[in-house]
View 1 (cartoon, rainbow, N blue to C red):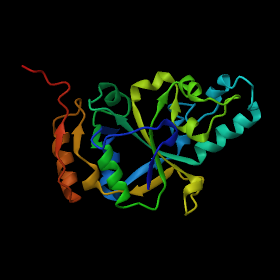
View 2: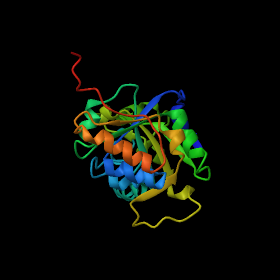
View 3: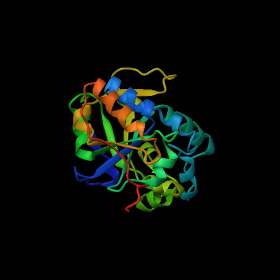
View 4: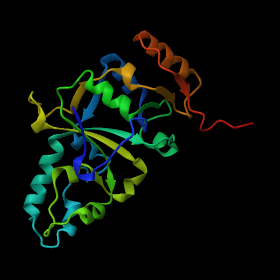
Length: 242
């Protein structure tokens, strides 16, 4: 079951386009397992040390309601008990994300939309409670929505908020919390794999504009080997019009 994040009262169109920029090896793993990987939020701290952190909210707690000791404890516990799947929410392909997330020129973009993603998960993994929402960029924006005094911030606030310097990510985030899982998860695990219906999820597979010409044929052959027939093409971002 997927819940739209309640505190932001977001309304999505099923047709809103979303993208996952990944390496070729992760595409193969996706095809082989038919599972969407939800990394533990602590893994994402290699990119942003404030992922799932309460600390940026401390300057907005005018009454000083949370001690530094408590903040540090929460700062460690929450990301360890949270698993996320991150998507780029836009109807426009991103040059910046091609350069940021695939580790080389052989990157892949999985194109879908919100309706397809939700359907692909619910048809295979309906036993999971998954929260969905767009990330807010800027902790002060979340603080401004709070009417209580002193202001208090929830785990959802920490997980669905990032610093404004990451605004280019335009992230739609799917979240699973350990306390919602019926099966315990080992704490040394890097994440969870959730079964999905790939035929329902994937609209198109797009290959990096920087990829060598033979990658497209390789992706088509590998995809066919696993029994799928997605539309596959190379990005035209770097193609000259004439």
